[in-house]
Image (cartoon, rainbow, N blue to C red):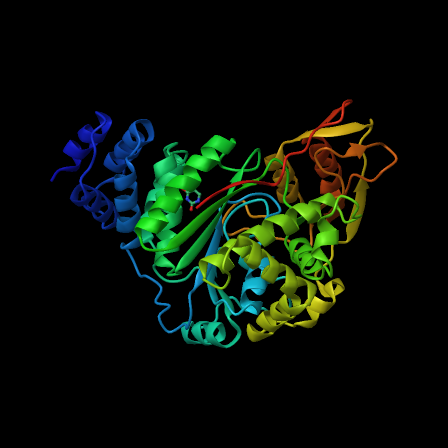
Length: 448
Ligand code: URA
C-alpha cells in the first residue's frame, strides 16, 4: 500500500477499505507517513467526506492507537458524557453527582485545554486541596465506593487523534464532520464507558452553528458509538448564549452548587418562578443529560421515570451531598460545597449596564467567552496560568428586556486594567431590539 495512491483515491471520491484506514492511522502515528501527505489526505476528506463505515473504521483505528482504559474492575454499567464544548458549560458538576447519588458509576477523564475558561479539572481546582491526579487504583476504588471519580487525561489515550488533531488545527481541516466525530468518539471509546451521552451544542458559541449541522454530527457519533457496542445518545442543546449565568472557573462551580441546592425542581422551572432564566436553562440541560444516562444504564424503565429519579436526588439534597463526598474523596475541602463563599473571589465585582432599553435579540456567544479570556479566566497557551476567581455573571438573557437602570451583568476581575475592555466587549456581544423576541427551548432534539 502507498499513501500516494490513497490520497488519489480519496481525492477522486473513493471509499477506503478498513485495511487502508488502519494503514493511514498507524502509518501517521508511528511516523512512517509524513505531515505533508497526511495533510493532503485530510484535505481530500474535508472535500469528499467519508461514508459511515469509513468513519467508524477511522474512529476504531484511532481508539486502538494507544491504551484503552480498563474499567472492568468497576461494578455495574459505566456511564460517561461528553460535551462538544461551549461557554458556561458546567453540566458535568451537576450530572455526575446526580448519577452517582442514584448508584450509577461514573469514571470520568477530563481535560484542561485551551479556551475562554479552564477545563473541568481546572474548575474543580478552585476547591482547596482537590486532587485530579490520583493513582489509577484509587480512581477505580473511589468509583466502586462512592460511584464517582474524576482524573485529568492521563496516559496514552488515542495518541493518533492527538497527532492528527494538531495537524488539522494548522491545515484548516478541523471543520469536517467525519473528522470531528471520529476524533471525539475515539477518545470516548478508549475511555471505556458502556453508555455515552453526547451533548452536542449548536449556535454562535459552538462548533456547529446550525441545528441541522449539530443533528448530523450527533447522528454520526451515535452511529459510531452504537457500532462499537456502546449505548449512545446525542442531545442537541442551545449555545446561542452561554449556559447558565456564570462564566469562569470558581464561578461555574458556585453555579453548579446553586442548581444542586434547588429544593423544588418543578416550581423552579415554572413560568412563575423568579429563578434566573439562565439557571433554568442549565437545570433543564443537566436533567435531560442525566435522565438519558440513567435510562441508558438500565436504572429506569423510560425517560419520564429517569427524569423523576434525577429530580428527586436534587430535591432531597442527596446529589449535593454526593458532590461533597466526591470532593472529599479526592482530597478537597468539602466545606466549599456547603459554603461557596469559600471559593476564590475576585477583587473587583463591577456592574455592567446597557445604554438603551429593549429586548436582547442576539448573543455572539464566543465573544462572551473572549471576555472571560481577557479577564484571565482561560489559557491562550498550554503554559498560561488561569485566574480561578474571575469571570462574568450574566443576569439577563436572550428574550429578556434590558434597560440602563437594571444591571445586565457583573464582571469579576482581579485587575483594574482589563475592566473597561471587558465591559465594552461584553456589551458589544449582544444585540438589542425594540420588539419582543421569541425564545427557543434550550433542548433542541435527541438522537437515539
Ligand atoms: N473536539 C475534539 O475532540 N475533536 C474535534 O475534532 C473537535 C472537537
